[in-house]
Amino acid sequence: MIIQRVVLNSRPGKNGNPVAENFKVEEVSLPDTINEGQVKVRTLYLSVDPYMRCKMNEDTGTDYLAPWQLAQVADGGGIGVVEESKHQKLAKGDFVTSFYWPWQTKAILDGNGLEKVDPQLVDGHLSYFLGAIGMPGLTSLIGVQEKGHISAGSNQTMVVSGAAGACGSLAGQIGRLLGCSRVVGICGTHEKCLFLTSELGFDAAVNYKTGNVAEQLRDACPDGVDVYFDNVGAMNENSHIILCGQISQYNKDVPYPPPLPPAVEAVQRERNITRERFMVLNYKDKFEPGILQLSQWFKEGKLKYQGDYGKRLGKHGRNREGQCHLKDYYCTAL
Image (cartoon, rainbow, N blue to C red; front, side):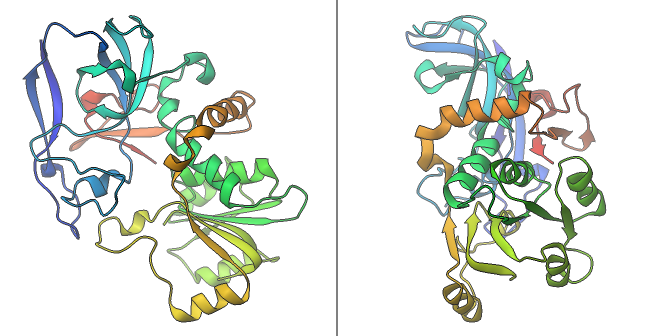
């Protein structure tokens, strides 16, 4: 059987911007038979996430991310359907997902590395298991729960950077659902600001590309900031900064979390502001209840999800769900 796959063709360099030529689409043969414990799957959806920029480097800079190898297939979050199974717990027709799904049209995988997913949890929108009801949703929910220290009825204000992105857009909504009285987003276009306030229920949005950000934040947060969900200083005493990521720095060779200037560190100490790095993989025991909570909010209409868009290398295209299939080669979150 001949299949298509996407391999890493070259590295952009630690301080370089990725380009289409860093990847290559090729055709290879897939064995006709599978072994005990394996399943043959057909790929339905793939997710391209910010952390993958680190995997394009020879050294990812972390101990929990392995680099992609040159001329080898790329991998990441994916969803597919089982076409043939020799695994006790998986049958033909089951929908499955993995954090290490190869970027190819079909694959033979170890069934022990797959998780079965229930389409009813997402009203049939399987792609949501890579977004609002998947890793971005879990990262937002568990990050806010574990590091945000939100107390319902405490009149807390939450600010989210990268607020129109996959995690940021969900984190703001979750902050509201968990009890924040005011939620403010930071993003880079007028359209995104309008989306946050008119569609997602944010109280205000700040465009960091126009005007003075500090002044805009002071106007948007008259009572100061209690929780800051940082994806990319009017913080109150005893407030909390959740370090979810630093997407704006992924094309640069800088440490994470980035060091603070001495003056900012002094303010942090004086006001007793926590600034904690958060990695969702450390909370696997909370994944199952987290998925159930997210899917319940989604079904109740309390959690809105913008979805992903697909971009074929050099061409734009999207299917009915706004998701891209493998034939689009490149998927990413808005």
